[in-house]
Amino acid sequence: MTKAVQNATPPRAVTMADVAARAGVSVATVSRVISQSRPVAKSLREAVLGAASDLGYQVNLVGRALRKGRTATVGLLVPDLDNPFFSSVAQHLSTAFEGSATDVLIFSTCGDVDVERRGVESFLGRQVDAVVMIPCHEVESAASVQRAAQATLTIQLDRQVVDADVHFVGCDNDAGMSLITRHIEEHVDTEVQPVLYVGAQAGSSSGHERFKHFHEDFPDRPSYLGEFDFGWGQEAVDLLLEDGYTKATIVAAADIIALGIIARLHARGHRVPDDFRVIGFDGVGVARFAHPTLTTVRQPVEEIGRTVLDLISAEHTQPSQALRIVPDFVPGHSSPD
Image 1 (cartoon, one colour):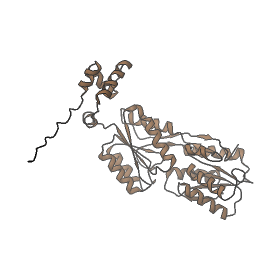
Image 2 (spheres, helix red, strand yellow):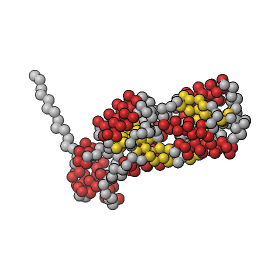
Image 3 (cartoon, rainbow, N blue to C red):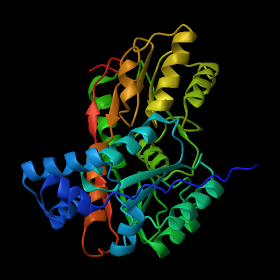
Image 4 (spheres, helix red, strand yellow):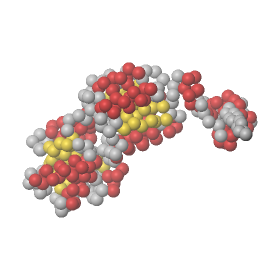
């Protein structure tokens, strides 16, 4: 004989009323604590959060989104999470949003405009409140930026499609390159250690701006252009050594390139900074583990994150604006004063 098995009745979901009863407060107080919509006395807040934890209360995010017309999510598209600068941007942006009850969703585009396009559609399908994107390409990413901007608040970060009518928040690259030029003029004998530039091919607006500024300050100096990665820094060293350089001051367009340069110089038996000075740009955390420590320009990623938060939190739509934040010069032993 087959015995019928009855499905157990699923447990009833814990409600705000249950939390209010356990905490000894009103449902309105629970709502204010959970939504962080208004200040609540510390003792009441702790009582509500304790009761919610004890009962296993789970906020209904879908219901909240339907009621408020907002999902409390922001989509961040980055070209490459293996690059420590982009990882740092993602970390600091997430940190900036910690107290705002908004979650940051991260999508790596792998530097591919087709993947970038899919990432935009994925975020729009999730009805994020804003799209923050570091475009893959200053021209080819235009369609993705425009698509995002048609649907929701869109902010370009670090790099930009120049003619796009959306907000831009990033580092003042001209100011950063001027800091490098000043350091070279004040502390480097360029007759002994002539200046070279190792950067990336056109496609990134930030890379383009740094390259342009370098050649305005050092118009007759050679450049080696490849990719924004560690391997290109290593390859560039092989090329400049083949060109006969035994001493030089190398300005790298990014710390990740500079770290590759230092590693290959050591491997090829050259001394930093005695033979080759190396100067980076970005100020990524891993640069402090370089030997010698990297001289670089530090992008103000904390302030950039707060600025993005302010733009998204603004109650009224603002005209698009480009906000460029001045970086700092960070002395290191790879190009000492």
